[in-house]
Length: 89
Image (tube, rainbow, N blue to C red):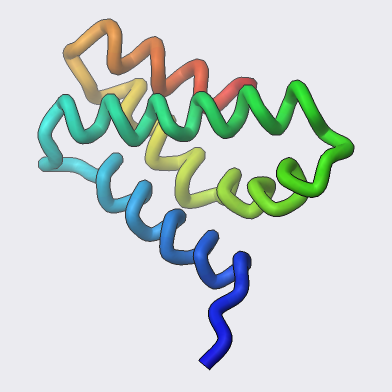
């Protein structure tokens, strides 16, 4: 069985979507949002690299929707800012 990088993207996408979901701990959500913020920053800074092309699928509709929901529903200001930053980079 050969596991490609694209299948890892699917796994990471599922893990991050779950971590950003309703009912998760604020700290778990903050770390997931921070990871997406870091990836978004990497993608926007270096759009021509192979790494950026491999990371692009992590900017899926589900993840952006999860971040949007988090921005609207969290009461923690730092988490709201990190989630918003991850969406708009």
